[in-house]
Image (cartoon, rainbow over the protein chains, first blue to last red):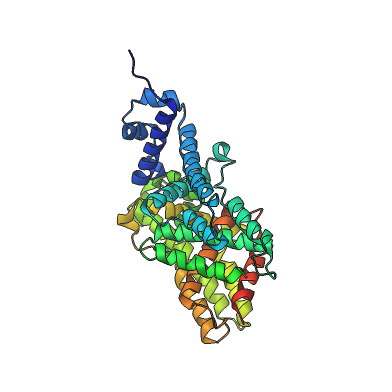
Length: 194
Length: 194
């Protein structure tokens, strides 16, 4: 009797193997062959789940995004004072530990790669701008923001701050460690909150 | 009599051809062969100037950096009110036109690529953190900043803001156009200046 395979799980295993290959060899090394090898599967088995490299990479990237989104929703659902909640969400977006740094590294490699494959990856974005708009929107609705703020421009600023910090935390994890990231966000929040 | 060749100029021509190839085909396409073709040179002629692909890419990247640094120094040398000068420098760093957007695109492709070639590109950084430290330092020396600011954290914040905006201006040039970039920086400067 053939072994039962959980297809959903198998796809996730392949996606995680894809991340590993990207982390080790960069996007240039993320060939179907290398990914199959990392996942311990035959080329044929991998092709059963993903018939093209683009499909595979797209799935692997969406999984990065979903995992991050799940973590954020989990925090948003908790009963916390607004400032603490926002701080925790921001700390979840900017990679402050090895696991989230790896996710962000995969994401940036993907963004650079997708620039030259627009026909496949047109619609992908990481959803961070929307997340930031929600955060600022919630704070505004609760009348917790300085009334002089331009809400639209504040969203753009926080969005740039978050992605800039994410990029720097990835490139210079020793200089920009978790404590320093947190300090910047607390400083930012103190400057916009009443 | 053989034609006289200006070697410095020839190297720059090759570097610019490298940028073009990166813009068209991404870092994966930036092979010595493709670059020679773009520059209208034989493989042998190109190898005369750059014996390895890494040397060539390193030179091409340093030229991006030098050109941006020259533009910034040119602004810094002008007689301008401090706020206007800082705004003009920030607008020079974040790509707000086609030419600087191409430079930034090349730079980001390079950063992603260099992550997996640390043996060659260890020491490269774009110098923006240093530039930001100088800007904040000058404003502090002239006592133009809000006295409550934490100078060290403010540098980190502005550095993230600048690189985040640069990344977004590159990825979403239509949403984040020149006028909007300027609006964000004016808003930022108004929030930190006395």
